[in-house]
Image 1 (tube, rainbow, N blue to C red):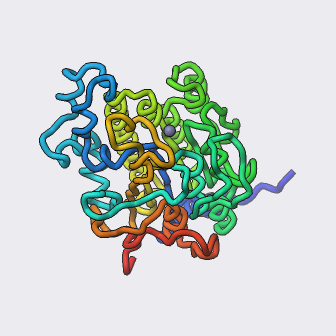
Image 2: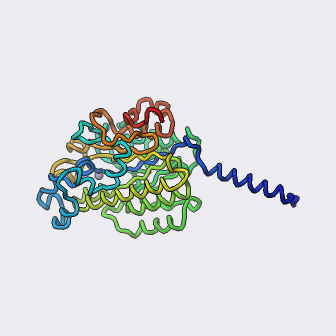
Length: 375
Ligand SMILES: [Zn+2]
């Protein structure tokens, strides 16, 4: 049986252990966190211009708008700026002015997919590895041997299993996230969360995911995916998180332009909730870079806006937004041709303070101008 410590020493020991606990919780001022959010198949037309007149004015069988008397007053405004602010108010009134947004074709700032597939898995693979991977030519749920930026970040920073996390509404993201099973915490569209990383609320959301019906059976509700991610953030404090949302692509493939617009407004509120959550808690407040992007665009015409694939013009057009303590508040970028999807990997590493060339010297360079000159 251990000998009892004198009372005075016990106080010293308690104070010392409290201090050690506080130190372990508090991040160093220069410690950095990165959250990547992907919104599947969101076109530049809606992101930069809100409700697209080309689709809005198309016959109902091409737009799929169920009731124009509901949709037009909800989302139509006279200018592209007013339309995009109505559709995504957090993105345009908070995120963009305080950060950097690339991809507006009207500002000579195209951002493009470099792979020659123009659909999801090849796009996510290009983001995760920094360059197109020629053998990724389908959305099949298989792993490829390419090491990803998430694996590299975990190894380089010496992070625990739970400190790098991928949480998404589609299983394909889990395969694109890593070259091997179990490389870090990965959660597919319907996976439970292991007890030691879960909370009662997470278990409830996982249950709801099975019951809330989706348009396509391989995906799950983005709202529930976000709720799981929020709980995961609060409990496990990952250093790097990839949150993958996908209902934008689902409603577009279903050719329901009204639901695409309604969804983008919801997705914007999830981004607002995410940013507010990060800024309201340690260690994320003031130390976290948020990167938001998409895996591919879609067609530009009333006939093909619902689809995307190599050869459907517009499917290669994507966009990237960055906000965080090390990114200047320059707003919308102009004249930035040459930025490709692979930039996501190097940009994530740059914001974690890591050298992206050590990850993959062939990777696309970080987004130009995304790092403040003198942080
Ligand atoms: Zn798709």
